[in-house]
Image (cartoon, rainbow, N blue to C red; front, side):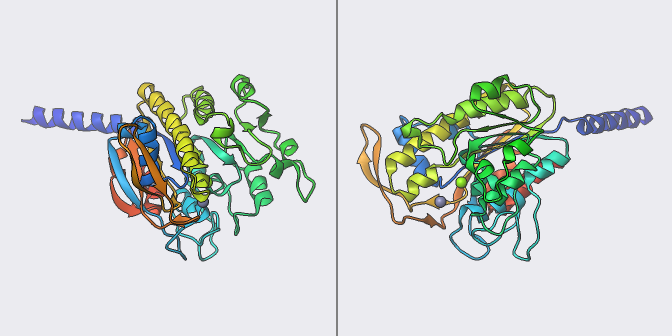
Length: 349
Ligand code: MG
Ligand code: ZN
């Protein structure tokens, strides 16, 4: 009897030891800007009735409203997911009582994580900025650029170089970013052995994928290779920015092509997690754009026609897809701020 108790307590303490030694989980957080269910459905049908999102075992729904509007913008919803607070439309990283919020990326750095950001817009645009900036207006691009230049982001790929080099204060932030290797191409990104690397894909906003932009999965692959050099865990945010712009333009072609680009990047991430299973992948949207409806289409060729009901955003809930450790936490219906809380819980394990 005594022996059994001893044995049981030995097993308990051993499992406790193992639990403590569990390596920290890396997080890859992917945002399809403006990617509601209709955008996913249209993209899936035009992609031969399949999407990489079908590989995710858990699906949830996120309420996207901001603190002052039923219909959010990308600044308020980016802040909700990055920092866990509802704020006013247009505001990044600052709450309704003027409090500065820390982002999940910044918290992950404090815990010894490596960090990365990829965007198919400029890197100072509202969605990526929500992970490192605190500004009253999303249009303060030069201020946001300065905040990136002094941030804890280790690797970034995105557009918007001009906000660093052609400034009202005549500073050249790229020259000031001495701890970064700012490279002029993806192949130079790949060959750099710096611990902090940035690549501006464009001086201003990147082109549409239809006009020949570099595909997102190439950038994803490059940053994952860098993050993989160290044994350290990482937090990586990847944005498919222009699904939203297709919605604003009310062009189904634009929406579908940008979704396909994002979908291929999701597949690249999923392929990575096969070799690195201790990685949580969460894919969601900040809001829906265009009020897109698929009212008819050709079943044989799987080509729906799209009808848009607005040039702006809508207040519909957006889906959240998750895979990997703690992925089941992301099923159910919750506020977009809970995405931050759920990721924070993973960092705190
Ligand atoms: Mg965006
Ligand atoms: Zn938008």
